Length: 238
Length: 373
Image (cartoon, rainbow over all chains, first blue to last red; front, side, top):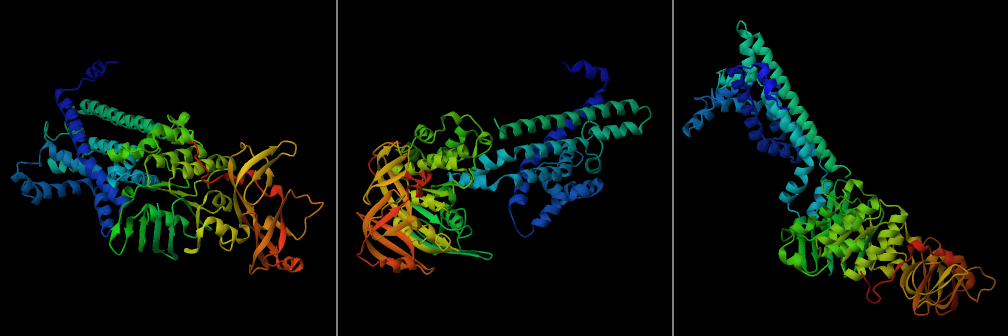
């Protein structure tokens, strides 16, 4: 079925399309950029015992419990043009504040705890005895990670990525605080909906975007469910 | 291959302090649960780190805490078959079997030795190759685990109670395979067990563990005959005999064996005449008579002379007889020894019931002639 007529019938304005495209780009970049660090932190938390482990765990979970506005403001303090990190990055030509890349950073930070949590649970569930068996067959620790740990934890890793993506699609508070609400640059789907509800006659546009938002979230959930099922079948009886 | 191990390790209340050396062949680690058998295997494989110690396999030092040598598990080239199969659940049987090969250097992979098809044939895995581990029975999974370990081209194979999780029928299916590995492939094996019958079938060398220490170590035949199997199993010792199938007697349902000890009748064995077999004659199933017994139900009466008598502390005496060219141990009460006036040099007759032998426990003979694999 061709989706174009349906989308046409929604009657989305060019500005609304821009917000949708930007949101997808921000969420995709935020998720992709979090994958590596998320997996590393999840692995460390799942497998290593060291002083400061509780601190790391708390730090990762902080965006989950802090008011998003607070997280956004802290990002602004650190990554703003005059912030310690922001100033250093500006030296090498990277500017995050009030740019779509900053929106991606805000979304990545907000989604990080969800991603790490899912990955960590699945890493903890991997049978260490099977990893030991692989080592006795000649696999180095890195080879064990690549050929045993990673494939066995894949359903949880995917779940973590989908959660982070969904979170990024819906992130509002930290984003608007850190990078504001600039159409075409930092106005993501939630910001656009918010803006439309604040202007007279914007209800119809807000409703259209709400429908799109629901559809995208449902789609992401469905896709992850299908993937997880396929992986589970691979691990089950063939 | 020779194996030298001397390790100590403390984990909470458990202390392990084990040292032994073993010549080539199959070495059995025997003892009750909690005696440290699995920990010794983990130390050998590099999966546990002893607090102090030295492990040398075939002149190659795998561990020497004094010299700060500790080879990681993946560089030891020691194959391990665990109690559970521990197959990689996301790979097919074929991929599991092939898993170790990708870590072999070209030179080692091309070196002569057991090839994929040999191992698949030996273990009867042909029809399982496309299956996933989750769809295998316990016995099938354990056979795949053995094949996978063999194909990683180990210098030494460790087997940690590989039959513990299997029923009698599956055990009967896998024990002959282990005998073939030992005899035909010449692969040095360290085999953990707490079953006397398995040890009697398989072991060349026996190391008895008790509470984290070595209670006895030496040639399996002598330790079994002297009942040096730890306090729990002392009464289960006996004489291990390597014999040959001499014939079958369909009328009585018995199989005749011949060997240095003399002729023995055992319950029917489904093996061809001339097949070497190995069996344990439990010392407590051997009676001693001073004259040829008449009107007796037991089929096996073997003439011999008393070689020595050793009191065993619990009121029993181990009487060792020289029967033909073999030594046969009998476990008798002190009262019987006194009544019969048994003394070294006295001619006697050893009596063994045929049904004392469980055909399930009779193994293939050790290293007599070439064996097909």
